Amino acid sequence: MENEFYRMLDIDQLLANYATVSENKCGFFLCRRGSADLLLNNKSFHVEAGMMCIYTPYTFIRIVQHSPDIGGCLMEGGLDAIQPALSDIHIADRLHIRSHPCVRLGDAQVARIEELFNTIGNRTALARESCSPRSARLRGMVVQSLLQAFCLEVLDIYFNCAPVEEQPQDCEERIFNRFFMSVFRNCERERAVSYYANEQSLSPNYLSSVIKSHSDRTAMQWIETLTILKAKHSLRFTKLTIKEIAYKMHFPDQSVFGRYFKKHCGMSPSDYRNKAAE
Image 1: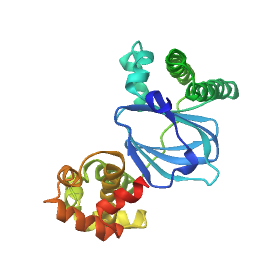
Image 2: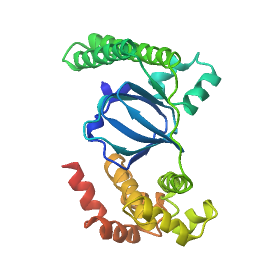
Image 3: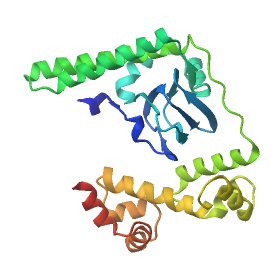
């Protein structure tokens, strides 16, 4: 039931340098304790207790770092489930959310969100219980209606709060963040440092020195890491054959992809897929 409409995520399981693109999903994070530095598209934000972030479809999200005690409410839903609640939201307001994704809430506003968040969780648990087909359908409709009400409540609170200003970035931080975002989006077809250097009109050597100074990895190591991350995701969460994954990721053939994967993971793609399915 939960996966049909939305999913609640565990922020405690997210690691530094976690990155994703929201694609056809919307989501929000209400920080209740701890803090985190987030990169949303090309903007940097410091988030702490009492702040809320909203992300819209095709937002690049990276958790740069977070405190050990980070925690809160984290939820995302597909557009099919959320669109009815967004249909009357003016396009200018949608663009405002994308430009100013983080706001600071008051205690009463936090309580309103938590109350609905917990209600959705409780009703979802009830919907999972064994019951007649009619009850299952009605309970599913209740969850979907609550989700839409929750979205409207979040938006009402958002537009009555002051936006959190983005953190200033120096030149090298902007270079690193643009590089990371571009690699995440393009590594399935572009795996040369020169490509990402050319994007920013930099020499490969200078780009590499900036990346190394701002992280514990070289530019090529980041490219390889994110390429393997994409490959693992396809192996675990799609039904594509290994040959189709190799083609999708622009490897010359399946054997070249297999050697690349084994070099970085210590096992073949098929072994990884079988192990992940256990």
